[in-house]
Amino acid sequence: MIPALDLATVLLLHKSSFFIGALCFLYVRWQSPSSHGLGILTAAFTLLAVASTFAGLGEKQALPLHVWTLSSFTVGTFGYAAFWIGMRRLSGGDRRPLDWFALAVPSGLTIAALLTGFHLDNLWRASIFQTNSLVFLMGSAATLIHDSRREKLSARYALTIAITVAAVLSLLVILGMTGSNAAPLHPRDAFFLLILCHFAIALFSLVFVKERVEATLTALLDTDALTQIRNRRWFFLALPAAPLAGDAFVIIDIDHFKRVNDTFGHAAGDIVLACAAKEMALNLRQGEIFARLGGEEFGLYLPAASNLDPQEVTERLRNAIQSLKIKVGETDIPVTISAGTAAASTGLPMHDLMSRADAALYVAKSRGRNRIEAYRVDRPSEQAAEQRQNISPAHTTKAGQAA
Image: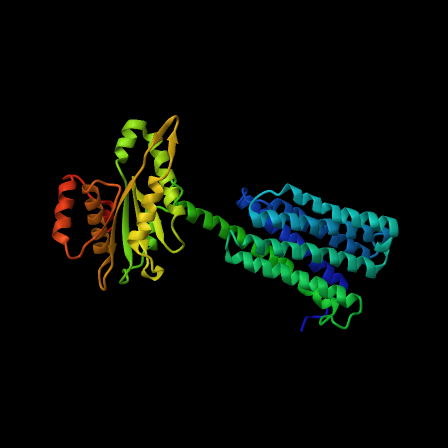
């Protein structure tokens, strides 16, 4: 049961919820200055707090009726429009200049109030004000849901729920004030719950920004700076503790990469690495674990559940790279890859699976490069011999180091 509070107390709580929310937004902006929208959200909650203050002064008859009603209405409607603009920027993480046209709505309502004087009528003023807030709150919730397709953070959904509840409560206030029998709550009770929503919105906005910063840092930690694909750290963390029967491990090497560096320069080598990595990533499907292991070497892990032939998948990558046109200045640089694949059997440790793929890679190199070789369980001695012929005494495979 919601406690029965007098109007003056409710207005004080209402104003306080906005001021505290504004301080929360200001604090988060100070902690995360690169986050968009926090400054506008601070201004929005401050405007709404000021609007509530005008209403409180009017309740105490400290201001003339025509002054506090117009001031409260105008400042409040601009506050909700600013809230929508700020939430749009916070949700998308970017600036959206056209959103400022939303201020035309409160501007039009203010002009209408001046021309008609509807703000002097409590029912009309409150109904139009709450309708304005309903529209901008629902717009904010819709934006958060729309942007979730490119950024899935748990706090985004909590923030969406808080804003949606606030919009529903605004609707209930409208229904209650118009005397509709469909209103399940008294306007005073809905208004009190609306105050709690203001605190929730500020809280979940803070958590949302924190989650986004953490996700960004994690992505930077797991992303190779040169190629912009996943790195070695992420790759080995993403692998299962032990391979299942049918899983496949693939090690891919760019052919004669040292020659590219020596002939065209390291800057050209970087371009080749980045282009090759991007092309391979584009030709892989979701669920296939792919990353740069170091140097010109890449790792690919194919779960058995994908029902894909490792040879076919890797051959698709080889064809894509062979068809790639990499131009540095006026020079075309041909690029090919070699790869070794190995399929897991029941009980085979991950270390042994990687070693088999590494052995198959060296067979591919010994047989002319620009080819894919699969580890043959029935011919291990031949593969080991070919591997020994192509490994210098100082060479240690990256897969072996990782294991």
